[in-house]
Image 1 (cartoon, rainbow, N blue to C red):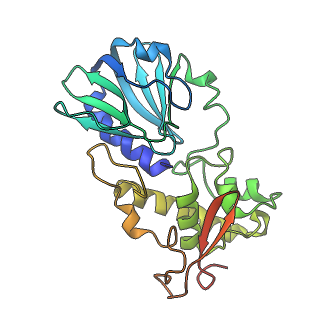
Image 2: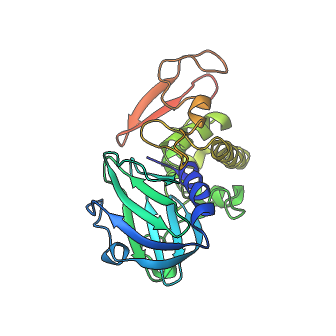
Length: 269
């Protein structure tokens, strides 16, 4: 599933091509995504895009009359096309832009969503979200306070979007490896110093992934059609039984809530 770096990569990739331009029309070939594409999106004509923002794993297109909230789901991606291209399987939605380009949405699993929103402040998708991990609000004091009474594993806490948004399985695993913290440790067992290290590691890993265009593990592509190159820098995720890049110890993997957790017993404690 695309996580914060992949969604931010999409935002940065499409924003220069649609901000300040009009969506002349939408072409919806398959409206049956996770939820049916809103009829207002299907009927959209001549609406200017004022900005392209991101909140958690949601892309937010600010129009002159409302917002479009896009979630990429498990396998969605957006491409910027500068000339007509033959449709590929799973190309479900086009935004035809006044400057001649097309923003094309491809989603093999159709678990993404395109929602119409009149007011972001009342959107049920956004109102309960925690702070952005790259914001000043998400600091060691915040996470330490939120972890004090939590006996859940620290990895699970980091994936709770009421605590902090945008950190999915890939980046929770990678951040905890950088921090030297075992993902199965109870959140409340971390000292204030360890929590500070975790917060700094999260910010470091996410920023590096954004620089590399995110991680392509299956379907994700950047808007320019290139894969996300952070996959080449993964330290533990998807590397079960391979040697740790730091110490050579085989990477371990366990399953919890149907999610794989990767770690190095030598480097993490």
